[in-house]
Amino acid sequence: MKITKKYIVKLLNEVCNLLGYSPPKILFIPDKIFLKAYLDLPVSKQLIALGIYDKDSTPSFMAMGENTIFVSLYRANKGLSQFNERHASEYLKFALAHELTHINEPKEDPVENEVNANEKAKRIVDVEAYNYVNNILWKDVIHRINEYKKQQSGDNNESIG
Image: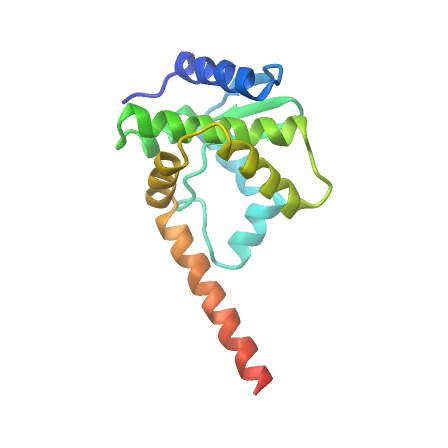
C-alpha cells in the first residue's frame, strides 16, 4: 500500500473527530530535513548516545512541533509498504493520535507525556494491529533497548553483591 498525503490527511481528520481535537497544521517534509530534526530531539540524542539507534535504524516518520505534525512520506512508505491497509492504517492512526495528544495535552514530565500520548492513542485503534506493525518496525530498536536493560541490570547486580 502506498501512503499518500491525501490518505494521511483523511486519517488525521478521522482521529481528530474521535479525540475531539481540532486538526493541526500538517507538513510533509523531505526525509533529510525530517531526519535531521528528529535526530536532534533530546530523546533521540539520548538513545543515540546509549547506542540504541542511529539515523539508519530509526523507523520514525512523524513528529510534532507547535501545533504542527511533520511527516516524512518517504520514510512512512519505506516502513509501512510491507503491511496491508488495515495494519498500516491502525499504525498511522496511533501515530497521529500520539502526536495530537502531545499538541493538545502536553505534560511537563517527558515520561508522563509519552505515556499519556500512548494511552490516548490506544483508545482509538486496534491495539493488536498496531502492536503487530510496531513490533516489526521497531524490532531492532526494541532488541537494543532490551539488551541495554539487561546490561544495566547486570551492572546493578554486580554493584549490589
